[in-house]
Image 1 (tube, rainbow, N blue to C red):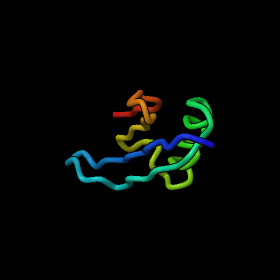
Image 2 (image 1 turned 45 degrees about the vertical axis):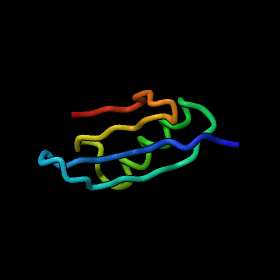
Image 3 (image 1 turned 135 degrees about the vertical axis):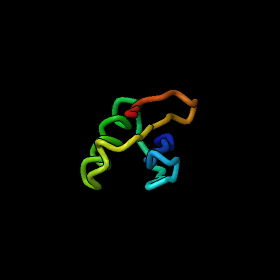
Length: 62
């Protein structure tokens, strides 16, 4: 069973544009899934972060 990861995208004002949870088996898989979601929604250049259930920062862009 996978772990739940959290992907959040922000406006410069701090407003959340996306706050999505998804499941992955590994941190590497979570990074790939998170990047795919960002690309699909055209948020790759927005401020974003993807965190693991342990609180590790897997993706970050400011």
